Amino acid sequence: MSENTEKFKFQFNKQTLLVMLLLYLLLIIYIFYLGVDNVISSLLKANVFLLLLALLLYYSSLLVRSFRWQYFLSSVNDQMQKNPRFWEIYSLIAFSFAINNVFPFRMGELYRPYEIAKKKNYNLFFSYASIILERTFDVIFMGVLILSSGFLQGLDSILNQSDIVSNLLLSGLIIGGFVIFLIILANEKLTLYLIKVLNLISGIAQRKIISDEQDTAQVVSNEISHLIRNKWVILYGSMASVVIWIIEGIVFWIVTLSMDLNISLGMAIFILLTSGLIGNSLTSASGLSQLPFMVVQLVLLEGVTQELALSTSIVYLAIVFWLIIPIGTLLHEFEKYREVKVSHDVRR
Image (cartoon, rainbow, N blue to C red; front, side, top):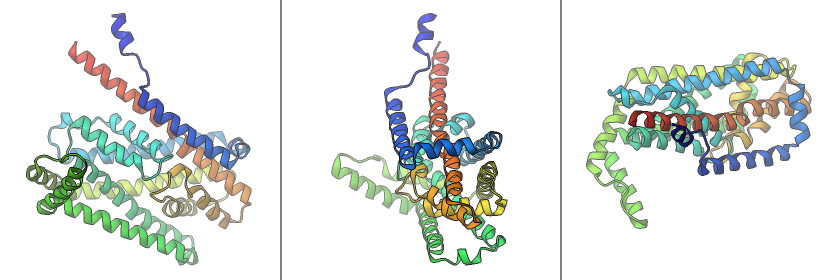
């Protein structure tokens, strides 16, 4: 009995420790770049109660993201017992965000569909398509909320600036690319051509990655076609994206309140989403990118000092982008531990 208990005690594996060390190393380097004194003094200035409220709200937005992704994945799977549990999805999203925040190219978004496909035997193409659909909704409604909050705040002149307009246009092109890719995957013939190209590329290096091309193309096109033609998926995905961005806007607004900034909720939403759109490029890490500097530039529009604008940006980074690194990692490890323990109990 004690032997079994010892065997299944909670512990980090070597891969997780390596990822955690890289995450924290990059974060520490970035904090020293900003200035340790700046980070500490900024956190000490903030209202702790309001920061806890902001933190609670932020993790509630992850609840909405988790319900959305779980709904997408289950929409084509009638065998509900094969679908992932909610907390399994939640821990995976939190961990993927931790990876996104310190590594470029949204590596966390590449990891989570692969991980869930491997664990639950989903088709890998479908799993990645569900992420693309998520991001399509997110970028569309991010743009909608930027425009609506900007005009409501009387910021027509800012929205007419070339850099913001060019980034909105770039986002439109990205959305178009996502939509085209989903349309390709929903068509059996086009999917078959895509699989043949992938096999051709992989065959040069080693061997084909997909053995049964025709059957795979049929399964993929059927699943993804069902996904994107499901009116409830479209409706729920749209509503979830709006709720997520409004919650995250409220989180930033509460952070500004904790720093004694008199910024309206509409302005807070505009600042946060515009900063995210312009400062969060695919080639940079979310928590170490230009986003905090874009936040500073937009907060300065409210006539505050540069020191206060930087302090607000640092506090927001700390509770949203940096804190999720240990929390996401621990949630992911506890979920893996739970799975191993449940599997062991079933075998017994």
